[in-house]
Length: 264
Length: 154
Image (tube, rainbow over all chains, first blue to last red; front, side, top):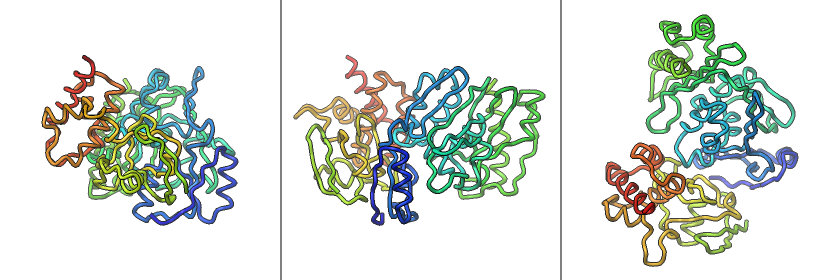
C-alpha cells in the first residue's frame, strides 16, 4: 500500500468536512473491497476517512411496512437479524450469501452499494426490493441510484446513511456464485411489492438492471413457467474467465426461474 | 500513529504507520507469528483472528482500525499447557498436515462454536468457506471441529 493519512471522524458532518479538506480522499466502511484494491496499488487515496466510528451508522430499525438498515450495518448482522429474517427473509438470505463469514463480519451494506461492483449481491437486493437510499443530503430511489459499472449517482463527498426497504409481499434471491469468490456470476432478486413485480439482475451486465420483460410476464402469471423462454440478450453482458456472455445470458433465465419458484 | 489494543488479554501500545495491516502489527511488532499470511489477498483465511469477538481476516484490516479493540490470536487460545479443545481436536483427528492454514482454521472455527455449539457438517463446511487448506481435503478438519464441539458441550 502507498502511504495515506488516516482519519476517524465521529459524525457524518465531520467526515464530509474532512473529505472536503483532503486532497484525494476516500471513505472507508468495511473495507473489504477498498483495502485489497489499495494493497494492489490500484487505488491510492491521500486520505482514508474511516466511517466505522460514526455514531448511529449501524443498526436495523423496523416499522410496520419498512425495514431501515444503517449504512454501516455488517452483512453478518443483516444475515443474523431476527427482524430481517421475519420481515424480508430474502434479504437476510442475500446477506448470508456474500463472500465468507470473515468478509460478512466486516463488509457493510452502505459500502457495498456505494462501490456498486457489477457482481455484488446488495445492488440486486436494493433494486429488486425497490429500496430507497438515504444519504446525508437526499433520498434516492433504487431505480435512480445505480449508474454504471462501479458507478452510482452519489456525489464525491456524499455518504450513504441508510437503506430503507419496503416489506414485500414475497421475494427471493437466488445466485449462481463464483465457486472461489462467491461473487454472483449471475444473481436475481424477484419481488412483489405494492402490487408490482420487480426482477433485478446482478453479475450478468456491467451494472445491476431490471429485466422488464420478465416483470411484465410475471405480473400476468407469477410462475417460473411464465418466464421460460423469454430471451436474454447477450449483447453487452459481462464476459470473463469465469463465464462467457452466452453462458451468463442463459444463466439469467435459469436463475430467474429458480428465484420465482423460491418466492412462491 | 500510536495504536493501543488488547491482545490476548494483554494491553499493548505500538507505533505503526497508518498503512500497517493488523497482521503485520501482530507478527512484526508483537512477534505473535502464529497468525499466518497465506495469500495476502483476503481469500485464504490463514490470518484469521478475533477482533472484539468476531473473526476477521487480519490482512484486510488496518492496525489503526483495531485501535482500542480486543484482539485474540491463536496464541491466546490455550490455557497455559492446556490446549484449547479445538487445538486438541485438530491434533487428535489429524486435521492438519503442513499446518500453515491451521491457526486460521482454528480461529474461524472458534468463532463458529461461540455462535453454534452443535453445528452440522454442512454448517461447518459453509462456515469454513473463507479458509483454504491445500493438504487435507478438509475432511479431517471438519471432523476435528465436530470433535471439539462435542467436547466443549460435554
